[in-house]
Image: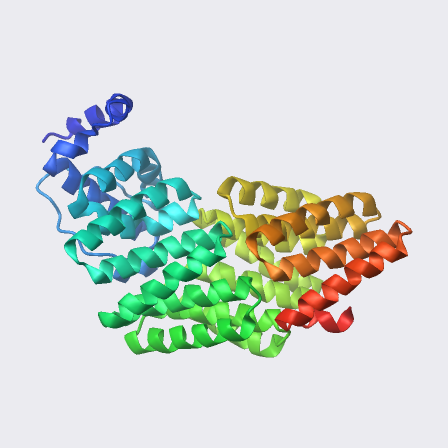
Length: 409
């Protein structure tokens, strides 16, 4: 195969796709080269996670240059459709390729492609009896369901994944499944359950020496404690997460921890520190093309500065990604800023929209937050009866999940 074959392949993509017969279906050399290049690109973009990816032998074929992170991103964007086709038509490559590309697909919001690849890969893993691969793939599918607000199927997948990983003795995958299960419980307002699962995950991460996974478990534990109002304990876990991320070169993990630290500072009314944390996180996320993280940082920054332009950008990103929980979060933030700046009518509409989104996903924290916002707006609009109704629903909602906001309502 000559180097020109790659160009001939980029030019014939549309024709091949229209026939549903991608070139990779009958070309072993091209398939192997694409898998190797995808691994190389991911190692360039996310070096801290190299240990999680399967090692692929360099094939006896020309490999396109990847070079910098920008080049790696461009190659993945250009070849995304063909990589999906490779997973669909080549069962032998499906699991390795799908697991390799997860972070890229997740960060870019390419959920439809990710789901298709994972479904093919799960079938291939089951056919070959590869329990370890199935556990990894089910964990990833669970994560994607979480991001789209589908908590019940996510919980089912993650429990199944944790069980399979435990059976085959794969502590690393078991830790990931448990950590993400804790994340599901957090969004559901089940904070004690979330903390239990995350502590299990943290112990397994330390047992296996997976420091990248350890930072996520620490960060998520910090987020759970923050939701419970345990700010000092939360800050300790989050600061440790930031320290390890910087030590191992994991800017994405660092950014998420900084967002949570910014949230703690905001609740403590330290506006300057909160804005600084969110700006640092935003810079990290923009540099690494982490779109969901970018939206979270913009939400925090917009809330602290009362700037709706940040919030509108955050909302647009979450809508593009299909992350309904994030959309509910930012819509509530827009409602709060509008009400605080003297536009309670606009604030009421935003909170109504947020309540609908949060109810649909089962996000009890954002549901209670929406009721609180509706209470404030109704009070300002001269409707004390409606305000009291929403105030009670906010108070009850926060009390049910053990959130500290219940005390104030």
